[in-house]
Length: 467
Ligand code: SAH
Image (cartoon, rainbow, N blue to C red):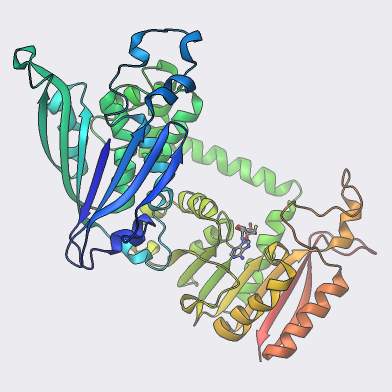
C-alpha cells in the first residue's frame, strides 16, 4: 500500500520537518500488522515528495485475528485485498508514523505547520464502496480537486468488468495536519470496513480527528455511520455531539455555569487555588507577553488568553501528547484569527537555551521543576534567568512537609511518580534565593492553599522580579 504526499511550497523540503522524518533517510517502523517505511523519492527546494509504504504481513494478520481456530476460518483469511489497499490499517499507520504531524505541532517551524500549503496526494489503491461519486462527495467539500482512475478487476480478463478499486489523486491548499486528519477518517469510510472492533473509543477518535471540519461536512451522516461500522447507537451519539459543536445549546451553557458556581462555592480545590494565585501574581506584575513553561494540558493558557490585558501567550512543553490536549482544549483551530494570533504552543525542553523564549515580560513555571532531574536544574536556571530573562518569574512546587497531611500517602512518598524531588520550605527558599542572587533578581514567597500552622501550605510559590 502506498501513500504519496507532495508539496511545491518552497522550500519544499520543509515537508520533512512537518512529518518529522528526514528527507535524506529511509526509515522503517514496526506495526502490529506489518511494517511501515517512509522515504522521499524527491526532495528539492521546489518539490518534495514523501512516500509511506505499508507492508502488511498477511500471515501475521491471520495470527492477530485468531488464526484457524478462530471464527470464520476460511481461505478468505489468507486471500484478501487487505495487504494491498488503503484501509483502516493505513489510518493506524498514519497516526503512528506521522503522529506529531497530524497533531499540527512542528518544533521550530510552527508557522509552516499552521499554514495552508499546496499539497498533492496519491493513494495507489483505494476501495471506494460507493464509487467515484461518493469519493468526490467526501473530498470535494473539503476543498480538494479529485482525480480517480478505476481499475478493472483483472486486466487479463476485461470481460470480468470493473473493480471497486481506484487510484486516487487529491490536490488542495490545506494544512498538512488537516490533510492527514481527512485521510485518517475518510479512508476507512470509503472502504466501509475496519480491522478492529468498533466501540465507544471510536466515537472519540472520530470527533477528535473530525474537529473543525466534520460538523459542517454535507456527508457527515454517512461518514459517521460508516466510520462507526453502522453501529446505530454510536452513530447517533457522534451526530448528536457534532450537532452540539455546531450550535451551542444555550440552556446547557446556563446549566454548566450554575454548576461551576456551585463548585466554586464549595471548597476551592488546590489546582484552582494555584491557578488563581499564579494569575494574580502575573496580573500584578503588569505583564503583557507571558510564557507558560511546562504548560501541560493548557489550563493556565486558557485563563491567560481570556485576559484582555495580555497580548501574547506562549505555552511550551516537552510532551507532544500534553500539547495535543492543550490544542484541543483551547480549540486553537477554531479561534478567531485575532485571538489565535495571541497564542502559540511550542514543543521544547526547559533545559535548553531557546531563542523563541526571549523578550517576554513574565514566565509561569507551575508544578514543573520537580519533574527535572536535579543535575539538570542548573541548565534550567541559565535558560530561564540568564537567557530568556523575563522581568517576572512565577514558579510553584509542592511543599513536601505538607505531605504528612495527605491521608493514604505513605511517609517518604512523593506526590507523583514522575517527581524527581519535593522540597521543604527551607530547601525551596535556599534554592530560589541562590538563583535570585546569581542572576540579579529579587524573590518573595507566597503560600498557596490552606496553611497548616506547622507544616505550611500544600503548594509553595516564588515570585522573582528582575532587579
Ligand atoms: N503547568 C502545568 C503542568 C504541570 S505537569 C499545570 O500546572 O497543570 C509538568 C509538565 O512539565 C508536564 O506537562 C511535562 O511534560 C512538563 N515537563 C517536564 N519536564 C520538562 C522539560 N524538561 N521541558 C519541558 N517540559 C517539561
